[in-house]
Amino acid sequence: MGDPSSVHTVDEALSTIGFGNFQTVLLLYGALGWVAEAMELMILSFIGPVLQSEWRLSSSKESLISTVVFAGMLIGAYLWGHISDNWGRKKGFLGAAILSAGAGLLSAFSPNYITFVTCRFFAGIGLAAGYLFTSWFLEFVPTSNRGSWMMVFSSFWTVGTIFEASLAWIVMPRWGWRWLLVLSSVPYFLVLLFYKCVPESPRYLSAKGRLKEAHEILEKAAQLNGMELPSDTLVSDQVKNLDEGLSLVGETQLLSSSQNELLEPRNRCRPPTLLSLFSQKYIRTTLLLWFLYFANTFSYYGVILLTSQLSSMVNKCGSITFLSVGSQDSRLYINVFLTSLAEVPGLVLAAFIVDRVGRKVSMVIMFTLGFILLLPLVVQQNGVLTTALLFGARMFVSATFEVACVYAPEVYPTDIRASAVGLTTSIGRIGGMLCPLVAVALVSDCHQTAAVILILAMIFLSAVSVAFLPFETGGRDLSESVHQPVVE
Image (cartoon, rainbow, N blue to C red; front, side, top):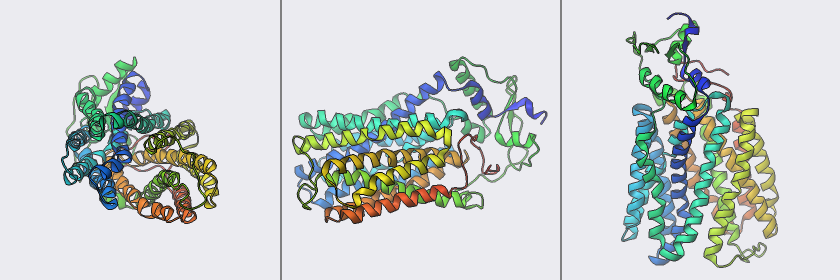
């Protein structure tokens, strides 16, 4: 293979060209997909009560509107990951955007409840692919400041929730829920409109042996950033490791940056499958991440739902009193708007520390702060203090969720990254589905203490699972293949 110093990998190329105009354009596109998913999910906060009144739905039918969306997301989370790992990141979010945009728009014209629920189910399948935008953007960011930029990317989820609350506040009283659905589908149509303008992930292309295409994308990135690529040969991580003396069984392809020549693969190994998640190398990480996503999702939605439930418990349980803010409808918009803003300081803190102290320590710190803020609510407090504590708890619990969404795609290699994160996300969705059935039911029956203790237990166990994760991904290059060694 020659002198190892005469070759470079995608990671080394990205470190050379740095973060610049190229990544900024990709950030805006990926953020559009992230905003689109947040807006479609936030619709559930506003549509259900209106449809219950207009179509005279029972409480169970109203709840089913949210349930079918999460059920669709359970299916879609793995489906789009499988497509993304086998046919490309762009193919994954293209299919998801088509389904989300189409089903989201059609639901606005639903003549009855059955049609509406069916459309929202298919929209849920598409919405599950939001993490693909995260993984795709992650694969363009240099190692040195990857964590901070991923926190910036994650902040667009909050932008989406705030924008949807504002949109609902303006549109619903004037034009009704159908126009809200139409306008909320616009971001996904913009994702489709600009689809041709963004590139495939060079890491994915490198892992698939398509190094010529990867090199061309990196050249464009260097030009936009005003930098130059290394003049030596672009190779996959596997080939680089072989050059450094590691044994390699598999496909070895390299591209000469001057002649664009590909060498034929000498061997072909079986493509990795999700069974790799249960190999000796990954099984501990996989099981701990599954529990982390489940418990973190449960606690995140628990804090959100606890806020809305306690806000509606005026005089019902005899001890909680919240200040009235105008009409009930206006109060709903204001509460969603303000609680979404509560996530911003947590994201700022996460962005500041995630590359300095690492992903694991960042999550433990913020879980601890969220736990401390939620703890006083084991005993009922006055309305203002309860609101402040819940907002503070949401600030940190939401931030841990975003750091976990950075850690998971970093810890898995490129050839199974999307499928692995998709399956992990599906496990997390189960926590989101169970939370309303357990925590909200307890608060509705005036068992606030039991509900808070349950959420506290989930936060504590989430922190424990993080502490036992075997790998810290901060400052590490992303690996391309399950056959590469993992640095502990």
